[in-house]
Length: 114
Image: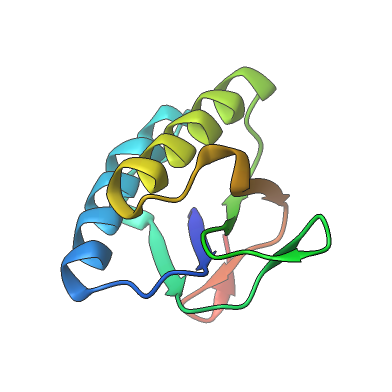
């Protein structure tokens, strides 16, 4: 089960959220064994983000969590695509976007661990 949480400084419309969610569903499939079928997505928009000591008008922090592991090459491609997506969809410059990946060994769902 992958999870993508995006904290962004800009206010997202419902259309933005739907477009981002749909495209993130396509992007996540670049990680082996991951698909939109199990993807959970959340957005925290209108956040205050400071970067390099300055309050940013347009910035994002994207947290990607996944059950299991993926190699660096696949994670790099997903990071590139997520940055491109946020730049094209909500005009956040890629140099103002951080993406992290967490590989989770113990992940629960429906009352038990996978």
